[in-house]
Image (cartoon, rainbow, N blue to C red; front, top):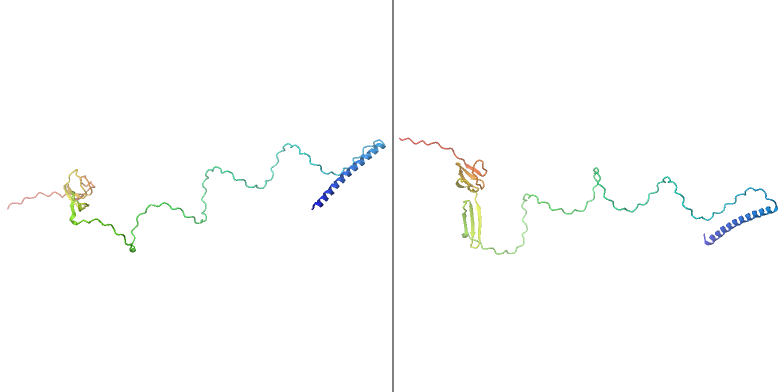
Length: 251
């Protein structure tokens, strides 16, 4: 609707409103004039019947808001409204107590292969395995640098060998005046030390006579030989005493 049509419509409604108001005023004046004429002409007559209700007037302007009324009784709960939008996330609460262990669940589907883990600590060295077969000879390496000059060797004229006091240790020595090379070689031989002497220390391999029997020491010891000793080994048991000899008769 354009401005002109709107203005025409407003003017028409205002004109109709004014006409209705003027008609009511005219009707009221006409009734009042008739009453005046009746008063002038004669005595007041009986009360007439009420007139018909006039047309319903237009609504009046809205009056001021009244004071709040008293609080009414609590009504019945209404129907549940639609779910509201989610609220903002609240602060993190305190951890709850551990719940009871649940029953074991079924095995899940196999997941994707994960990234390799970090290298673990080196394990302990295992036992040495058996020696493998001899491999093929390797390629010949490059020629190395010449070595340093060695020390002058020693001749056999400077060699010496002699036994130590125990009669079992062989001492080998080689000397050139400035240097001396000495080595000891212990020989696994049995050496007879005579009758057993209490308190003397005997070395492994020493043999003694004790109680008419020959005993050999199995380790260094100062214990007496005997069947109850773990340090001695019986080598030759004592024989029985012989009979007295009979002198030959004279011829």
